[in-house]
Image (cartoon, rainbow, N blue to C red):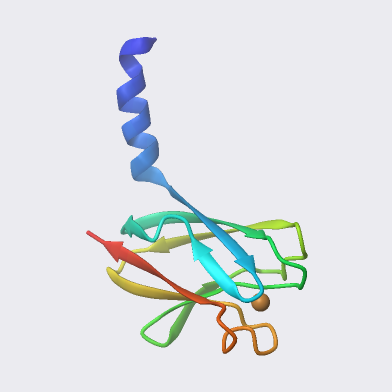
Length: 110
Ligand SMILES: [Cu+2]
């Protein structure tokens, strides 16, 4: 029913926010750099030619990581419940990739 559509859309948005992430040598692009606190689904795609991973930190502490490495052209999903507002760091921990530029931020707001 058309009348139900707005409610369904609002409920879905509150449930999980999708964040597209592109990784390549040597950068991490976050296509939705600001989300509301709560459940997020990080959709990671390796756009490069080397393998990459993804670790999420806040205040120097790891809050999540992909379970596996992401091969070139592959995708992986990381689901997190980000309850605390603030700036989260996204990094690739493969070799020296972080130092070479594979770091980005995701802001979580109320
Ligand atoms: Cu990497």
